[in-house]
Image 1 (cartoon, rainbow, N blue to C red):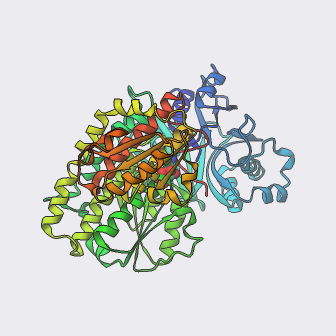
Image 2: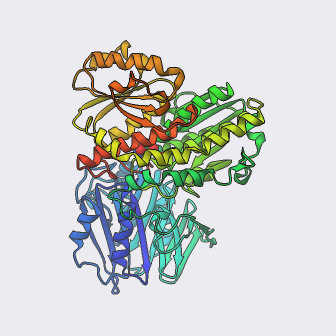
Image 3: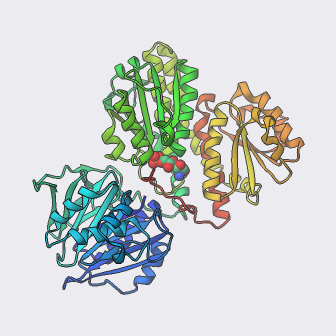
Length: 605
Ligand code: M6R
């Protein structure tokens, strides 16, 4: 969490930093700040609680002559949201921004008697004060001493008042990428912020000192050996992280899904078969494992639940789906015969990363399904399958989810084939049907006006239920998360058959119910459950596969979903639920892309 940036180069430094902060704002947006150095070497700070737009206003014409600078957008952990707690923090000669948590900041404050130097409540300011304490004119020496005593996770970017034009950085766990291009030297929390200038970047290795200079970058170990940066190329288009004509990234990213799904399928269907050879994934990994365990958080975990339903029905194989944050504390059954699959859009979620590391220690084979290339989870994985969704900026995950599902749909079919659970003809027919999915998503998107109208039925609700059975229940867990995070409506997904065991007590005329029917075998039972809530006064909005409609389903407000194989309904149904959440939030006038209290990349446990 938190977005950090550093830049020195030919462009207008202050504007480069503010623009980059806007691109990084999805990582945290309760306060923002910049520090900039001018020719004579003075380092000035401008910061405030609020958004980058507020910071821009506050800065006014300040920093126009800056020649180098750093910036930060914050997601508060230690200390409330106020100007004083915003980064950068300045103590003595040091000015610093930080992403992560310094766990031993209280002990360090006491041990080094820093109390009188601190004005904020943050752990970060302790790092600034301590670095200043260690600094005797040699930045590398002071940084090495500092990281020798810090406990926790950190990406630190530092300026020293008597080292004009030089920007220093070091990290442990929390990410930093950097680049040097014609425009100058730049570092950021992620590659999105660099893409305006170049798609070449390198991941800064942990516990290495990075220095940005006007004419290059210097990377070295803590013992002073120079290291050549390992550049890679982001295949995201330079402008793909911009909103274009859409009012919000969430809408843009919902609309991009047909292409994102196609891009995820590309190269993974060969002669009508799912194929992961280009990903370097040998069949033996899929054939030899005895059990599968998915670890993930939030939306990515919900993708795992869909995989679970596929694995059970198509492979009759054991699969657990674990909340990554609970995983290692719950004595998981993981050994050398387990294939652990970490799912993550960002590849940086610390809970997922730690769960994967734990599984690795237990001897499991570790595979991950990720969107961001070169991310921390990718580096811990034995195998990586990328989703190719392109940058996802809105906090609410949309195209990352449907592309994660795409990978799972193909992966499970590959496993079914090599384990003899599906014949060649069955797999080919499965893939032929799956190839219809992007067009089905296009149909849902073409129907967005109707979904917008239906959104009016739930917009005033305080509480809402989403009900379904089997695969639909798993899909609604995600639909419900989407609605609650962007609209602040308390929404609960419930397995419809469970309602009568308690929660039906909450159903009143003020509690709308969103029902989902995409599975033919469950239709009649689901319709009975819908009747039960209707009899208790609930307004029902029904999302139903078109071919399952009949006169009895017409008595509800209905959104018809395109016909694809029942197993694949997960993708078009989710897109419809994403649109529902989006319109409720947008019509309520909320900042859809930046829901309160949330951040896109969750790097704290
Ligand atoms: O980057 P990740 O996929 O690991 O993120 C996991 C969750 O934090 C994320 O899916 C979160 O639940 C989204 N805000 C949901 O829309």
